[in-house]
Picture (cartoon, rainbow, N blue to C red):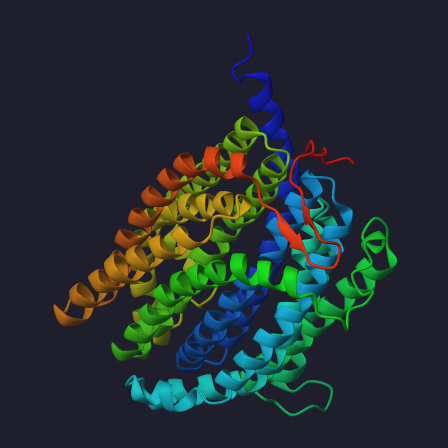
Length: 478
């Protein structure tokens, strides 16, 4: 007798087959941050503190923008489930318009962020390093968001492998560009932290350009004519993307701000705390890429089932994604508990007496990270499942209440006001993520039936008809 019902085993295989390349692509992206941290670590703890601050600020805005742009994903997956190919191309085109507009706004903000960093009371050496880094990497925000839009399209068609291959090429380019620009090889000047920022901008541009050429020339992506009529805004689809994407971006922004403001508070506690935080958060972020990729696969699977009005299939897809994410993070929690020093040793020389204080604190923070890993994996998978239902506004409210009202407040009161220090700040992360995971799981189970029954139609102003969501979901092999 099989351990699992046939339908559940089928969903498990389908999710793993889709999630594998998505997870690999996520690991490739975070590997760029890993490479940056390791190579900047060769410049010393002060440089590491600078890149920690600058990286956190950049990716706060980048992830918030990416959250909005990734509304392309549920739009495409539900159109696929409803067998409406024309809606696919229109969704992606408007996603690129959205990426351009958001990118210009974020570029303007990043160009004027230095006074805010000084106002927060960061140490001058960290601010100077962060500013040099941000002055270079800010130019990469437009290609970063454009790549996110095209990636959502490719994954929405359940064909994520091209993104994975292109992303790993980006990792190789990042290593070479860092070596050339940070340390001044082949006659180039040594730019230090500015060099790693320029390297990232180059990589983001290559990623977007490569994926754009691929989807323009390769079947089945080219069949959707993503770049046809690209100069013509489509108000109906753009409004729908904003309706779905604005809460998604806000949710990601709220979550990112939890980590960003924790980083800012770490900076107030000193460069040692900030450097240790950067090492430990990179370890946690690397592990987080797996449940994030599973959650993205869950968005597609839930979206296709919802588009076909298959309530049982949508519920099953969401449950499988949440179970897989939590199971994986349980394994990483054990790793963080049992092998913290070797993990820290990937970033810093454990034998260097100058790194002793940073290493000791980073090891302590990894012990706390082991706990929040479990909740972080569950909440991101639940978020992904809800996005597949195009349910984004209430999850945004849940994020605000749990990340800010509970997590950030707990960390500030315990870690800063009561003198609990860096570990207490991280326990605030645990509390916020735990509350979010419980509420988001409950929301999915309460909402899935209603969302599937109501369907999701996008008005077609040019044709005078809605985009239906009432056809069987295709298999991954179609």
